[in-house]
Length: 409
Image (cartoon, rainbow, N blue to C red; front, side, top):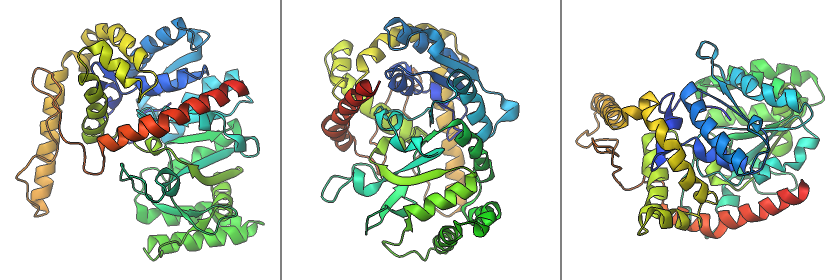
């Protein structure tokens, strides 16, 4: 697990409380700890301190065999790059299990608890990297409620299909040790403007034009040019075969690109106040506070999030850290000042652009006393639709995947 290098909110967004006193990072830690696998978290020291509390708890209840199965690695801010975070977060895992595949995830995927498809990824046996894109048509089949308005940046034509799918790269990857080394090329494109990406891809992948994959590379380049010029027509897509060949050349290792993921929460990261508080906290806190008691509220949350009982127990274990971690000691003042600063900057930018700035772009989600204030969720997100999907589709899918995982082990 890694922090986001670009830090959509700031370096410590993983400490922001997403339910009562429970910070963002706790939920993805629980999601993977439930599988009983070795985990390594690469993060700032304060985030690692929270992870240690989670580690001791999941070891005590038997989710992991020993505290050594949840490792924390403090980030080196003098050497921050996307690939460096890959190396440092995976090094302890590779040293222990050199032949095992690795699942990498961003540490702010709050509700992406259906981790089983990634842990059971069958195609990693034949490839070094598997990029399983989320597909709009699989998440929201025709006639279903599109409760999250997500951006899909590409169209992919699956093998054996005649219709392309709108896809987007997830915040999870599966790779081998060799595949990890190939991911070094990600540093060439991370944070670069969209207009520069095609040139970078061409410089990196020209050798593919001299290989047996030349035809696929040429078709991928043609797709990229049309994409850059915004000349792709509805339904125009790159075939899975060509995309995989191009990615293999770019990374220098055997890579499979496919669009079989039906998990919207894989790309719904906690990357802004309106996502962390306006969506995730509003959803989770809303369920808990609708009950007459806190304990009953967490029991009701079980219908949507399978580890709610453990969130309730961890809440008391995390309480002492609120007087230990500097950000939490001054939380009400910190978050109110942060919101005010962001709004000032945004209003200045709006004014320069000639946009009406009569209202605050970001709501105040906390009082000066630290009490959470409910606001309508972002316009592209539906809380009722999300809850219905979690209870009726996602949670049952999770239970089915867990049974498959237990059988496979």
